[in-house]
Length: 397
Image 1 (cartoon, rainbow, N blue to C red):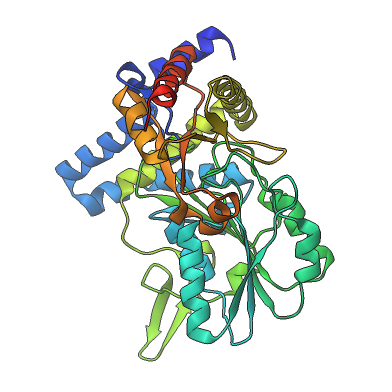
Image 2: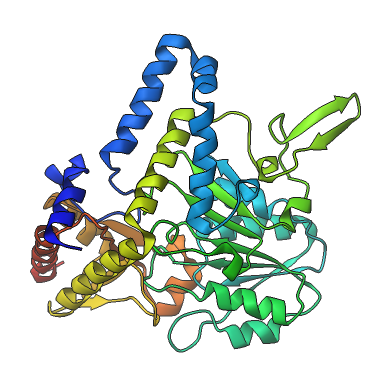
């Protein structure tokens, strides 16, 4: 990207004027077009009514499904829009029929919301949860996964880009291992941090469900998410059914919707949905390869600068890395460090161990500070972060 490109991106992002925002793995700053799109629809609702505004926007609503599908290389029929990444993931997972004795395999870095749902579901039916070990680089050990597969494995769950670590798991390789083994396990990929940050090819990955949110690297609104479903997954009956997912045809029967809309609910924010579409179009116009390159460069620059600060330990592992940078400061509580950095005008976040218990315990950590750049961040943002971390590292706890 040229300096002019960065200037244009920053001009599109009003939040750049007031803060050094390096918490894009939490919620990115939306471009102005996303804000304008949402406000426009809300104003229209206030004038003509919610149902009527929805009817007027039907072509743009349909176009949103097309754009979101392009983000993962999927047709509209395989895309559902939900209220969040967690909502998406749960709608997929809870539709898989678990039985007593089934095995659910999860990654070491699996996110807490997913694991909690898995623990609850397996406890109800008498299934078991097992973690696939990491390899020496900290990514899922695909050879170990291969050795763990048998006819009892019902689900394989993988978080593509862990929110508490800068690595990217080999999602396509996991899919390949499942196919080569002839496994009938349902493959769920949590792509909450990767969709919008790196190119995603659903067909290449081979997952049955891919879940993501609008508010992170896609730079869309909160309260909206997406769920990609494989053609096989479209044979499942959803765990949650309302009049959007099915049609009530007589007193004792119903017909499930043909496509991925079977995994949606009827009620939703159409302002948020349209904002999601605007964010998807913005990312597609910029290019996912361009976005990934810029974010990757910024993240590596942050890592190299943090390593030069005495007492700061960069915790990211893996061979392929994302825009998530995690670190700790010797002798300091990470939550306190994150608060001090934010007080200095730099938005970062704190990741506690409870968000990914297995991963944190394996590293002997109670928490980490997380910085996550996006394409619109510039040298001033990075300098502000490094200066704030340097002060925090010099402070005696």
